[in-house]
Length: 116
Image 1 (tube, rainbow, N blue to C red):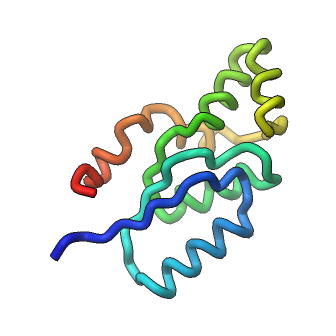
Image 2 (image 1 turned 90 degrees about the horizontal axis):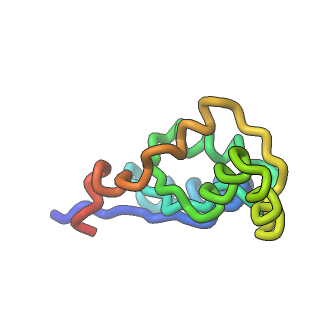
């Protein structure tokens, strides 16, 4: 029997919406494998808690353009303007939250999602 996956994306730091989606998936498809296609941060007020929620559940994540802009803004002052123009906020993330981002380009393959 083929394995089913739930693919989520574009959370944009909205913990309330993330929890609602995860709750629906848990209710309708208990134990389903999940992956996140990125854009966890940006726009909303809860980037850290959203990252924590995905990590707690072991959901593999790709780095979206908002994560890329955020990381660039942290490393290069000139990229901070681009981050802010694209709905960014001056997010304060702790070191464990930042570790979710590096090396995620192959997360879907590692998670076994190559057959999707």
